[in-house]
Image (cartoon, rainbow, N blue to C red):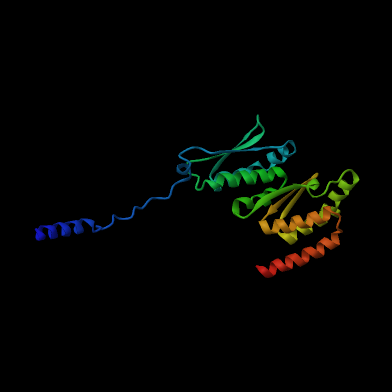
Length: 219
């Protein structure tokens, strides 16, 4: 009786022993259209009336990098007055669609194609927008003077802030758009806010010099 019980325990032990594991499966990376279950994704960017003529002039400069390098289809819908983008079967990365939409949107805000195209090349860049009234409520002559302080004589102040912070700034009436990386946008925005609040340009320049010197040491 004891020998039969021993046999049973031995057989149960052999069953519990793990066998050799199956080989690890090797899957090819998914293509962009497979990630979205084969669905075509769209983005639409409205064209404001004052950017319609500039868009016509530089259409091929916008079309070429989007269609050839980012592998995204692009067309101008003349009836709806908007630029339409969609993914293709050979789009290498699904995020290219959003990058292209950001690039076109940056051009519509007033940035040059040469500057806006950096949004396609670098991941850490983005556009931040704010209005003068977000910083301080100004009306009439006070508002005009604030806009004048932001630009400076012949755009001197704006260019100085752009070059010191490695950003690009568009001042469109009371709206301000800044294109750059997070840290650089913060420095540029602080300088612009100081000017709106009434700081003289000389004071802003000296503060900028100190901040940019600190940034240069850090990196």
